Amino acid sequence: SRDRALSFTILTLFGKNKLIQKYDLDLVKLRTFCDVIEKGYIKTNPYHNELHGADVTRSCYYLLKNGGVYNILTDIEIMASIIASAIHDFQHPGLSNDFLIQESNDLAVTYNDQSVLENHHVAAAFKLLGNPELNFLDSLSLEEQKEFRRITISMVLATDLSRHKENLDKFKTRADYIKRMLRDGTKPHGHMPRELSHNSGYSSSLGEVTTDNLVEDRLMLLKMALKASDLGHAMKPIDQHMWWSQRVKEEFFLEGDKAKGRGMNVKPLFDRTRNTNLGKSQAGFLKFLVMPLYNELIPLLRLEEPVLAQLNSNLDFWNVEAERIERERIGMEAGGDGKAAPKPKPKAAESKEDAPKPNPKPNAPKSKPLDRNRSQMPAISEMKTVNITSGNSSSNNNKISSSNNKMTYGENNSNADASEVKIEIGEGN
Image (cartoon, rainbow, N blue to C red; front, side, top):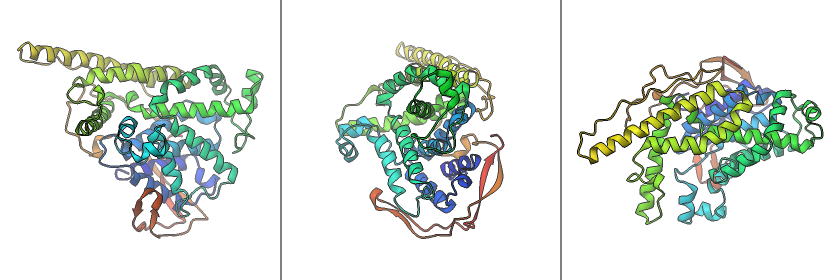
């Protein structure tokens, strides 16, 4: 799974939720689609690479499953949430929307400067499904495919941080309804799309609630869970959180360097000559962006102890670290030896099922040169192997290409029998 973390994660979650059997999905097409999506992530990006895709997919599953959201979702909504998480940064160039807009990039022109990358991620992924060899959804009814597409598009577009406050404000207006919906825990009947979906328990407890409200409130939860997961390294133990923080910092600085070389405006966060206090920038990121979202979402999911506790611990760490770096800077400017004070020891939050394990050595590790050594990352979970069969799958090793996305891939060299593929399933549910 080290070399195929994203594909492995998607297939694992499809297996855990029995989606392959429920919808008689073509396993060869599903596996091939997963491989193409994984290859579409740029490995050389320090942050927005396939490991980020896998981490966000895993984090979104954790929040939805352990937060009780799966109890009120249809199978189509569950499937869409997995795919939306997996494709949310598909073909990310390692540059921000602001950069693409400033340079009048073709993507910015195509999407009229509106949610440029987010529109591209989801559009490029759906173009792949136009290839019959990749369309694992062809066994779904037209209504199910339409519903899957609606949910997936909405979730991915919600990850645009320029609309963060807008989405959060909408979520706040529905928080009481969503809380009662989660409390009642009545699952919609079958796999029906929005016009046929119904939740009698939710409706009776809240009085007059329309079917559209029920569907949109579930979609709102899915969007906020993906947004929280996209920022999800903030809720991880400090060693993992620092691992990701160093990488996003480096990607920002590379963009800043490129912008300077082209005479473009460079925001302080992207300028390596001005953003010299990682503790200060990360504390601001947690306090002003992550905390407002998590303080609204996480209590509804009843995950305060494992999630908010770790998030607050990480914020405490960065606040102390910011002060340490500032004291060191002042000491060096004053002609002192610049000796740094000891780094803070973050508290480890208790965890629930599938929650990240607290760091056994809470002292923050020293910064190391960036590399892509998977051994630095924790395992997705302890796994066991089961066999999942797909009766309608057929062996197909033809070349896979997508001219729309200018991507071509070679022969599918898998030797696995198309009618039986081993998929890793976690111990928990």
